[in-house]
Length: 46
Image 1 (cartoon, rainbow, N blue to C red):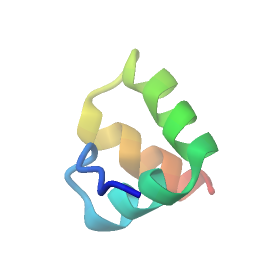
Image 2: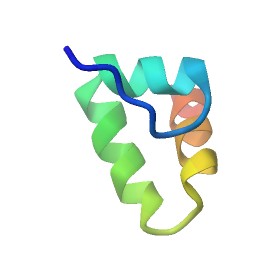
Image 3: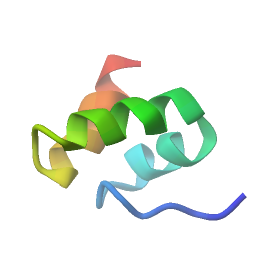
């Protein structure tokens, strides 16, 4: 699987890369908040 670098946070990027639901939620949240915050918010929610 390709490595994603979306959240500028290694732990959040790892989660987004391995969990399709986290990626989907991150993309949906990205419509409302900055990219750096999105990955952290999804990581913290799960």
